[in-house]
Length: 245
Image (cartoon, rainbow, N blue to C red):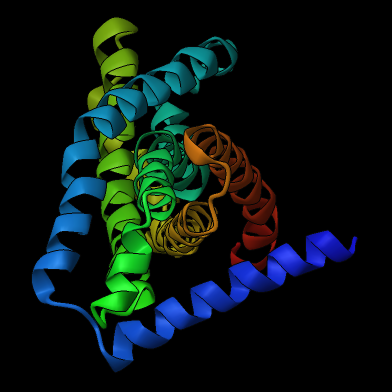
């Protein structure tokens, strides 16, 4: 138990230092743009494809039930609420963990075992400001941006399955969605995405920054980072849902 609390304390301090330097003495703007581009811009295709088929699956599963009651036009409501409140932020975050979070840990971990972080300190560059702060910024800003794209892609996936494959009335599909779905359903999902992005960056940077054991340690740190981030996302999703909605 003492070891667990020690690791939690180290992760908390590292994250707080990253937040502090994000406002106190941030690195050059190009470092922020580079990290944001890698996290958000290069992950769009993965998020779009995943969310499109997720929305399609929701429509596919909902159709058989709604068809019994002649309420197929409510499929759009179910898809929009599911994507906006839950699947949009959660699926996006899990995709970012798999693609970007693991890469963050591996990159920083490699710098640690090759003593590049020590070299930064020798040159008078604060590694927490140079390495941690831009990645925290990228997570907090990039994941909500991807979540918006995920929501739109998932809704169109549900529209394609419901309207084009099952012949649901397109006008009712969109009108009922506008009647029953509120803007706050999507804003609440963005609140989750901000928190998830912070978790992804903080956990990935922590495991990379304190990597030990050579190249084998980098692989172990990357695995631990992905597993821990995914678990924290799913656990915190429950509590955020209870608070926000």
